Length: 552
Image (cartoon, rainbow, N blue to C red; front, side):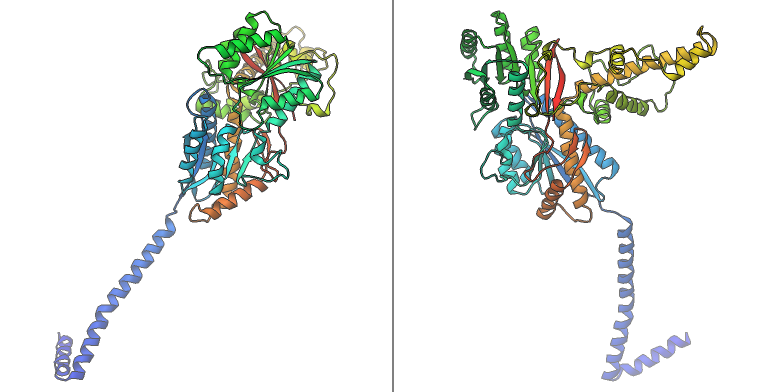
C-alpha cells in the first residue's frame, strides 16, 4: 500500500505540468501495448503450431468420357468401372502425396453431340487433371479440339482412326498434342484382317458391307483396298445406314450378296444390322464365310444371329484379358468389386473341395486366381503381324479349331509335354515307390493331392470365366487411368492447385513415361501412339467369343 501511495503522489505532482502529463500518457500507452503485443505473438505462435499439425489434402479430378447409355453402354460402363478401380487404388495407397483423386464421368452417348457436351463439361472443371476416353473415334473427332485447346491430357483406350494422331497425313503433324491412345489403328486392323482372309483362308471373292459414318476413310474401305492389293476380287462395297425400320436396306443387301456369291463377306457395321444380315444369309442356304470388325463383339450380334454366327471371325485392336499374362490380379479385383460371371459366388473354392482356411481365403483366392489365370495362357504363341510371316499352307481354318479355353486339363498336360502324357510329379513317384499299394500315409497323401488338384482345376476354370466376363476395353481403360495417375504423381505434389502449367507437365510426363501395365508395356511414341499395337482374332462358338490368336 505504501508503494501505491508513493506512486499516486508522484503522479499528482507530474500532472501539474505539461511535460509531466506527456510522460504519464506515454507510460499508460506502453503499459497497455505490452499485453496486446504479447497476445498477438502468442496467438501467431499457436496458429503456426496448429497449422504444422494439420495437413491439407487437395483434390484433383480424373474424368471418364464414355457411352453410359444406348447400345454401347456395357462397354462404357466397364471402362468407367475400371477407371474407378484405379482411382480407388491410388487413393488407398496415397499414390499422389498431398492429393486425393475424385472421379467425374460424362455420358458421350457414342454420338458427336454427346461428345461435344462432355468436352464442354470437362473444360469447365478447373480441378481436372486428365480424361480417360472417349471410346469412339467419331466422338473423339468432336471432343478433342476443345480438350486439347485447354491443355487437358487425354488417354483413349480404344480410338482407332489413324488421323487422330496425324497418321496418313503428309507431312505428318500431331493435331492434338495432349492426346494419347493405347490401341492400334484401323489401318493396322484392316491389313491384318485382309492378310488373314486372303493368304490364310485363301478367299478370292470378297464382298464388303460398310455401315460406318462417312467421315473420311472407313475401316471397311481400308479392308477393301488391302484385300484387292493382295489379289482378291472385291465384288462390291455396300454402303448401308443400318437403321432402316422397313427392312428394305437389309433385303436389297442380302439379295445382292446372294447374286454375287462371294466366298467371304466382311462386315464393318453395327452389331444389330450385322446379326440380322448373318441370319438372312444363313437362311438363304448360302455357305459364305463371314469376317467382321470389333463392332460385332457384342451379345447383340450373337443373340440375333444365333447358331448362324458359329465359325464367324472377328478382329479387334483390344486383346481380351484371357490372353493378357499380367491381367490376373486386375481380373480378380475387378470381379470382386463389380461382379464376375452370373454364377460366380465370389469364391474360387469349388463345391466339394476341401476348404478349411477362413481367415485369409479372400487374399489367397486372389493370388490363386492370378497364378491360375496365367497358367491357362498356354495358348498358341503370339505371332508377328501377317505382313512379316508366310502362313503354312496346311493350316486348319480357325473356325474348326478347338479353342484353347475349352481344352481339358488332361489335354493341356499332354500338349505341354510335346504330345506325350505328362509324368507324375517327382513327389508322387517317390511316394508310389515307397508304398506301391497306395495304402497308409501314401494313400492319405494321394487323397490330399487329389483334393488340391480339384481345387486348382476349379480355380483355373473360374479365373478363366472371370477373365472372359471382363470386356477387353476395361483392361485398357484401367491402364489409361494409371497412365494419367502415374504422371500426376510426379507433377502434383507440392503444387497448390491444378493449373495450365500442371496439366502441361502431366502431358510431358505421359509422353516420357512407360510402365508394365495390365495390357502389356504402356508407353507412347512422339505422335501419341502406342509403339506396340496388337490385333486379336476371335471366333464365335456356341454364342461365345473365343480368342484364337493375337498378332503384335
